[in-house]
Image (cartoon, rainbow, N blue to C red; front, side, top):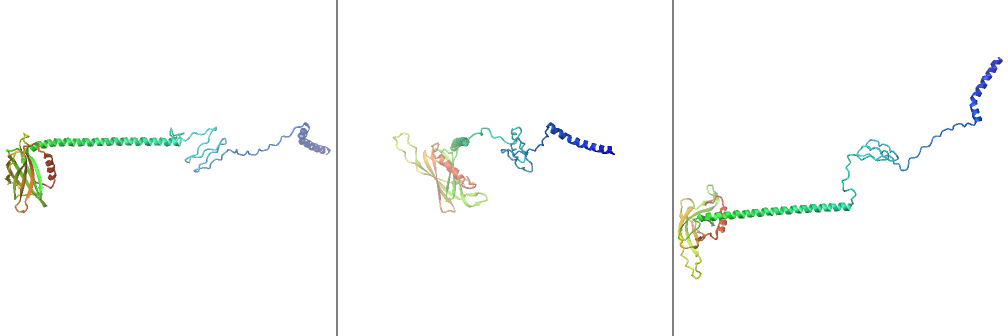
Length: 320
């Protein structure tokens, strides 16, 4: 019984001393107890740091690195942040500034624009001048060609007129077309003259059109000498004019056709006067035609040709 009490006390003492021995040893030796680690407070963000921009189009922007804010997103696509302090290269679809424009002042750019406008205006004026010169040259060439053709035609007509010459006259609604054979009338040689006489109709005829032949006409032809050629001897006196010559104009069988043969005794300028009327008309008609006898080329050739062209277009189907 006594042993059991001693043993119980002994184990209790040993247990207490075992638990407190390390603390007593540290107090005797002087070993310090480890201090408790304190948590450091969070450092505030640097002043130069920029807040990341808000997300666009539902896509988040990556956080900034090295205290620099990431660039904003473009076209709805996030731009990757810079690495190691170096900016990322620009996107491939971005167009670089044109060469030569970078670094120029506004005055220099304005001067270049003015010089370009001046050059364009000068070029346009030069092209306009060349165009005017070409048009003027074409016009002159055309006029020269027409003049040359007219000269050739005139020569041909003049040669043809030697054989047969035509005169036209319009009087009192009657169109006279006189055809002289040969066209170069010579004195003391017989000439043949044919006349086509038509009348202007108020109502076109289904057969003849605007002009109907005059079938019942009564006409006379009177030739009067108006001047003689100048004498070869300047001292000689001019001769006396021959008397007029009158011929009756006869129908030739075809409707509106009449004719005569005449021989003129002297060279010079003669006037052919045709007078007459239709049988059912009370008013006579008179037309005059100049004849240059033994004179070629006649001085009135161009004027008569022009008059013929004018009267030829005076009506539809005018008979000749």
